[in-house]
Length: 544
Image (tube, rainbow, N blue to C red):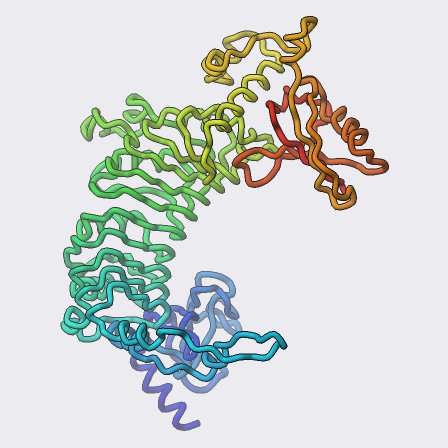
């Protein structure tokens, strides 16, 4: 007990407020020192920790006494100093990861396969020694992963370049780094370094002590606590960045350094702002003058609407826009825009995507506008509205899917009644273009369909497939049905076609490129109303 108290006293002098530590025996349990000292009612020295994962006991207040304020109600606890580690140096982590090849008993026990009679048979990795030998020769190492090893400093920085001179990719995920000067000291000794991953290191908001790192091309700062102010500071030290990842940093605003729009980042092709708190499209417009930007990831934010700004709108939003650059189109080279898991609910936002000069890859999944069950529009209608898009929600749009979608879209519009052509144009900007492109007649097939050609044109070929467990296995059936057939009538026909009795049916439309079928829940809607086209597939399920 005395030895433990001595070690606690010794370590407590080393620990200070703001230090990053991990639990002894668990390098993934990382936190920040918020208090060092006595705790009322308990003997000895204690360290108050605010844990990153939020899994602890209190908020820094214990037995009615406030010692510090944690980030959440249950993210803090008090720990004896000897149960904490301040980590190791970068060089020590390299040696630990790539030079220590002795397998533990647990690792050896886990290396087995089961025989035919369910007995464990130990296995040995073929070439394991050769791999280990190559990894231990640091001069041949081009990629290093030192994730969750407790790296907190450089060690002897002058040795780094001599040991790993060819390192091109470095993963420092989940370590104890917080000062940019330490990151700079490591990177400065790695002349070949191109990719740096600092995910889950809580970085200081003061960007200082960084050398010029002109070789870094990919910088990953996910869950590091940085905001756009730090990003603006970093760009002067890393001017050649091509990919910048900023996921999970609670970013609410884009704050440019010297003007109303973001400038610089002349090589930035990919910007990842997923899982943040951006809710105004005006903030995103501040990125519109990044001339090399090709991919912008905005999944899991709080965006409600989007629009493409004309020159006048840019001048309204940004007072100094005219002095910045008037000849450069906003988002001129952007070809991929990921907007999944936002709150976009208006069709005008979808239509505005047509105005982006180079946009061909869109993600809109998990938005109200893309969910027919929440009043949104189905995949075929989104495809028809977006003339240039080649990939929707990660699925490539084939020429056949585009043609079928556009025809279905036009027919679904023709099945509804509008007061005037102007009203149609307002709600469906591409209607006239698509109607002419595919040679679709104005009249509904069911009206005046006395001639054989008109009657034939009103029939739609549909394949019906049973998928319900209580229905049993039945071969698919292909039928030609009038386009005016309602969903309710189709259910009755399915009961007849497949001789189904006492089964309550649900019908789904299976669409090419769509991961889930669409429920047909409006029994009064016709096949034309829904936009079902030739050679569509309807899935028949039971409601049990």
